[in-house]
Structures are given as C-alpha cells and as structure tokens.
Image (cartoon, rainbow, N blue to C red; front, side, top):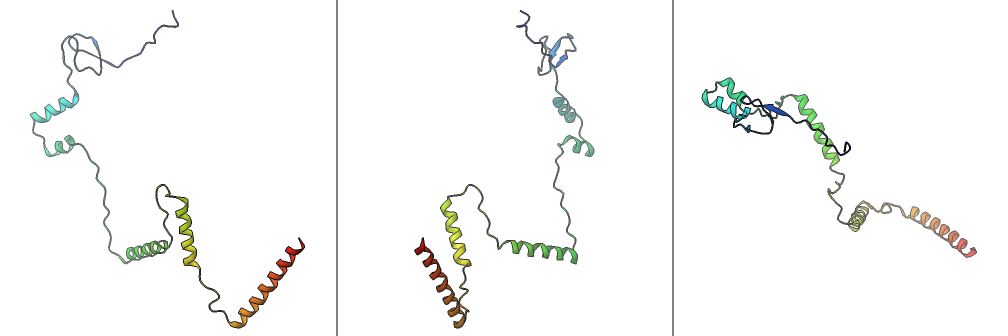
Length: 154
C-alpha cells in the first residue's frame, strides 16, 4: 500500500483574513464569503479616487520603450563614409542574388547556368591574325592525327 501512496503536492496558498483558512492563491474568494481584491483592481480604484499628478501619470501608464533615433551629423567625414558604403553595395550588385525559399526545380538552375555561359562566352579568336590562326590549325591537325592513330592501335 505504501507504493501506491499519493505524492504530497505543496500548493501556493494564502490565508483568509476573516476565518484564517488556507485558500489556493488562484481563488478570488474564500468559502466563508470573503472576496480577495487583486492588486490590479486596488491600483485602479486608487487612481480613480485621487487625480494623478504629472509624475504619477507616467508611473500609472505602462512603460513603452521607443526606438532611439540617432541624429545625423552633417560633416564631410560622414559623407565620405556613406559614399564608400554605397560604392561597395554597387560592386556587390553585380553578383546574381540567389532566390529565397525552396528552389523551383533543378532544370531552372541548369537553364540559368547555360544563359550565364552564353553571356560570358566571348569570341577570343575574333582579334586573331591569319598567321596565328594557320599555326593553331596545323597544331590541332597534328593533335587529332595522333589521337586517331592511338585509337587504331587499341
């Protein structure tokens, strides 16, 4: 029977001023009929009775923190710093931003890469002289001939 004995739980209690009975803190009234007044209601009643002064108004209102705004100082140093920051941001704008969220599909990424390659490809042989082009073509022909001969042996 000792194993099944319930564990004693201590509750937060308050005592009733009329009957000295222990009542749970969450209860607003005692079984004897006494009603506990909450601190919020007590403070509200006090503020209704006495008109609050300018100091009490600030205390009675809930304190709200406001965002502190810094004043901008007009100086050439600050302007130079702003210009530097802007120039950096412009240089970063060249990079393509990655899309946020879940990617649509893998094929869309491949299409983007192909587009980038097409845009980046520049004809490096456009400014090539005829003599250089002939030398390169002869070199390529020799390389191709060697590769073909290797395949025939295997």
